Image (tube, rainbow, N blue to C red; front, side):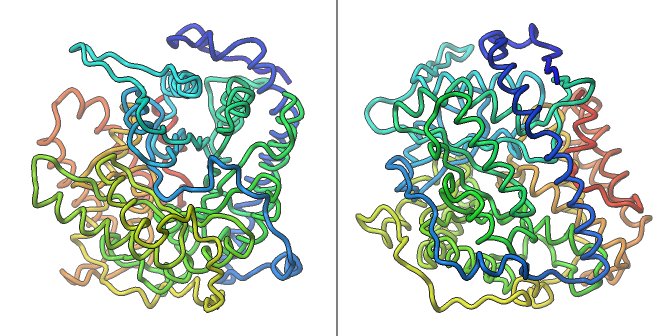
Length: 532
């Protein structure tokens, strides 16, 4: 195999990242693992088709010994023992990265996935910023002369990098005539440039692994880590990974995923919004029992969401792994104190529930919410770095509990349909422009919430849902009309140039994938073709 970067000379400081040695290392990863990646991603479709036939999922009988076995993951390194508040966000632009590192959070999830558009400049600038951050030299001066530097009066957030999911390719790299694997590009470049330095500092390298659908996909990551460590002379087990449980099949394999990664595992995270998206995707044609109410009405206290989070805490602590809570999507509005007060109250309630359920920490999307999350976890943890000792023997979650979507309170409304269409278009348009983290109606939206929005539209159409607030039935004609009306609203909210360049193709894309008879597994796959 031969790996080449097509646009090597076009990204600022790209020559620092795309060295011959770095590309040779990433080429080795592709030679060793790309075929397995292809096979495992292909296996996802067959498994989904089986679910479509049976209408259910269950724990795997062939791995029962793993679930009942007496084993633990490796002990956490010192830098990851206290994770009570983690801030998430893209690694570009550098100002956002600096603000995240300076935020007072224990961890910064440097997101190369859902909160980042994989434009070429973003891919390279993220790696540049992560390298500068690892070496403590990340800085930025705004056009107005304002300087942003890393603080030295308090500890910086520990960096945990989230590469792209296994499903994403990157056409900026050619591997024997095919696009490269986005996950191997992101991991390989970061590991090559930073692993030895971070190891010497005791600060990593650490990763978040997104969108896994099976323990076999976790095994692949474990083998990637082991191979990479050996190639660069890093001690086995130095890499630590936290896996986002954000797909419904992965919820049935939490033990198995930790087991496969046990030398490299740090914990599991309740990736709530992608999890909701996954349930809609997996059971989109399984009938009315799986039609989820309006997204805004689905709380973490819904029975199926409660079952998922409680099982996650129990599983993690049984294995000595950390249980990380989900995203607080609400963001303060400094120009609107009333909105800010409401957002803070919702975040407090969410984080208090997680801390009292046994989570060891949780996520926020905005620096102003770091102190709120920390206060709620401080109230439970006190001086302890975590609560691994809480084993939760009271939890007994069954397959039926995880799949009890039908008990979710709330209605499916035409107003919710409107909002789904608005969010799907608005997010996709901004994603096409190069920004993967978008504030919409005082919520920090990323690809996961856009995926929920467009998937609900598809599911409602194919189940001929009748909307509770209007009595209308979901039809292509209704969706087309409302999409047109919401598009007109967006046209009044943005300038004409941006609308023509980004919103018009976004509208066409959302229309196509919502009205198609075939379901598109990931919105970002066809969207990526529009930015190539």
